[in-house]
Length: 407
Image 1 (cartoon, one colour):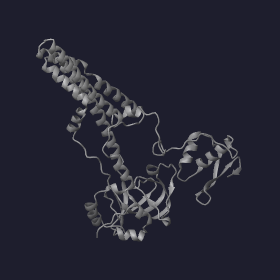
Image 2: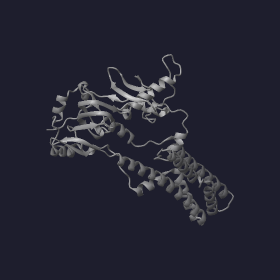
Image 3: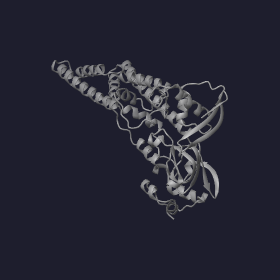
Image 4: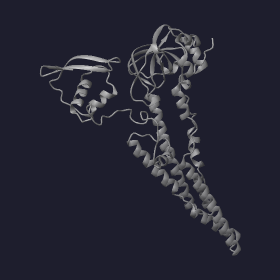
């Protein structure tokens, strides 16, 4: 029986019972054999990556820059006119520039691949009626997945059951606060999000590139457009070619009119052309951008393309509609005030005691409060705790200090 693809709009409106029919699945999940058959048809639960180019061809691609081609032409001219030293110097500068660019970007790509491998995860899948731990790439539509605190959601789907189930969806929405998912509300969950607390069981409907996270990844993997710096270098290279052609033509014409001899005039014009070529420019640019990449690496920024550094540095204003995915997904306490808007140490103390003694999973607000300042809680004893719930919308701590019980 063919498996129907489920769009996001259908996922929001289709009941679990209908989804089981569409995916030819049930509460007992799939058999291993059925899952293998589906993998052969639908592929693995992986995001498609850009097709890799061989190292040799990747290295040669760095020579297509017009400025590099001009320098190679100048080196050839120098060699044919007997200026072997000039030819060696120019080719050395070109080669070192290309090698430096290639090495820096290749090293960054390798680092990114290592990070991706470390992120490979396993998940608990219901197969043949039993819970099995398998690599997430073997997930197929119709699988039943079990999730608990700390897990990364491996594919899109719809919740079957949930218990105190909270997800961090900042990778998709940019929002820092966890989102509660309840099965009775027909909740959807998405690949790339992670479980903050609780337990959940869900039916997989979309995998790989068909997930919402996969669609974003596909856009990122689209062919890279030339940035402003690359266009500028290309335009400068063509300008150099035009200037050299004009100078050679004028000098050759003047020398020919002055009866200097056609061959001698041609050689002189070529010598001038080599002289006006900026041999050291590619090397200077490569060294500067590599130095910038190394400096950024010390700050934890991985530069995959050296040419992106000048573009990034030339920005005056960066506008974005979200902050969670661009920052550290971290809240910081700036000040603590009472209901009248006045600074209050008592407010911070109460919040600190609550966060310090709370036994549930610390949320981002607790972490921000506890890292803002350290209070001495010697002599404080926790008596009782009322966990957070969505009716009271608060958690409470009863504590004793100097034989006085306070909440």
